[in-house]
Length: 194
Image (cartoon, rainbow, N blue to C red; front, top):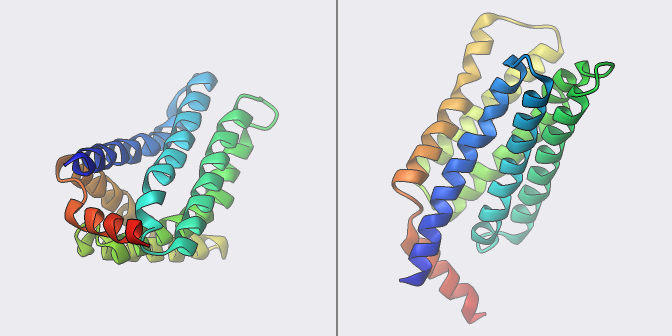
């Protein structure tokens, strides 16, 4: 019973942190530089928090992939925090856009892909969510590579909504339904035997 309570709370926290992490989309809209910086820092910390909460659940399935996921999420969060901090400096505030458009985007795609692979392997949530997330990551990669080569169409930009809707859906799922706790409990019991 105790493990179900902590796993349930973990699912709620992960869901909330996913939503908080997306607040960075609105950070650049604010006129106040300090507000944009604050939003970026909080978003970056949320990304790192998601990884810290998910790592113990994922490592049961695959330690190497889980460690890669954790390290990529830490890098992603650090890039978000850095983008907020450079925004405070008037001379280098353009770097915020560059960080989000290039290194952070590709680190996000890699970490999100690992996230959805690990969700699929652990079956912590219904598999359609994991498959949707993987398709969204592939779409995001294609759209960003196309832009890198100068191909930009509004239709391509619309495809990026797949990842946002997937992650918002996942966040709501985790807050309302949580993880499949029987799978977590049996995996934890298996790990404790070894």
